[in-house]
Amino acid sequence: MRFGIPALAAAGADPHESPRDTVSARQQKSDFLRSDGAVTDVCGATPCYTHDYTGLSRFD
Image 1 (cartoon, rainbow, N blue to C red):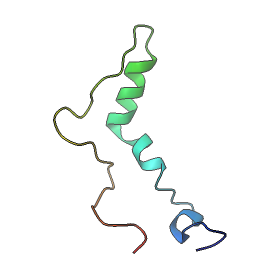
Image 2: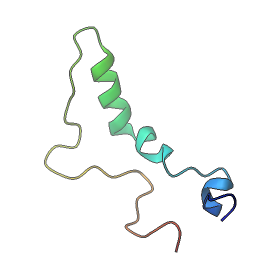
Image 3: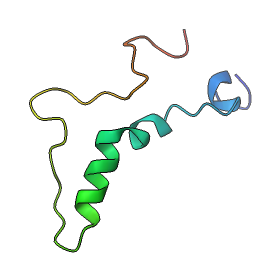
Image 4: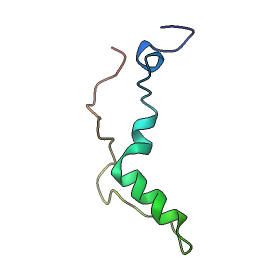
């Protein structure tokens, strides 16, 4: 940990970017930003996960 920042984030691999970079999140933003936009449910009945989700902590 450096300056209160976990090593992974300090190295440039910001885990907060993953949700914004998924295909479903980009689709939802695109749907919302249209002139007739609306918030859409891009994951349906299942939970949304990022492309790099493993279920494990990144910091263990």
